[in-house]
Image (cartoon, rainbow, N blue to C red; front, side, top):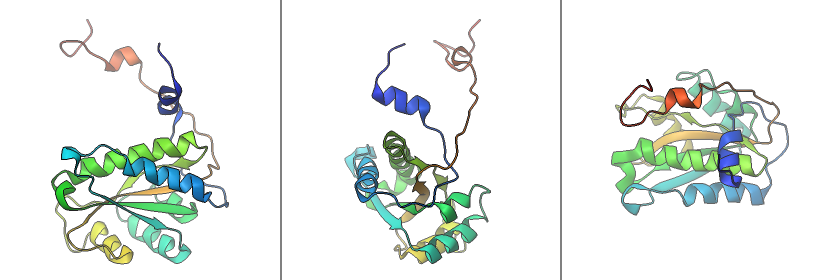
Length: 180
């Protein structure tokens, strides 16, 4: 198998839900944000806006709010930083994909820098006014025409996770489904 630093980072990155009580270095935070900034976008429209949340009360409020949509919220409360990934303008028709590409790039960059991260979705497909997305947008001061896709808790990992995967040959198929 071919190997390089990028493939190694992709293979080794795991979601991190527990973080040490230490700040993220500004240089590392900036590198993670740059990874989101340099993400590929549909039609090269570059629709991202990133809101860096460090305020403990705002993180606590986001934590309480996101409990409505997932059980994987603890990282928002205990990570020193949570990055909100919002999509504007030309990206709004592909807001889920645009946000996912940026979130994934940021999580990979975090791992490559010795940080941990995971991304959780907060978007509401129907864009309801009483959704978690709508309420989080208000908390973060985002305009109505911006879509809030993901939150990315970020920090120094305080856990090691083992992960099991299906066999590679069981998920790769050539020319048609099934390897018989």
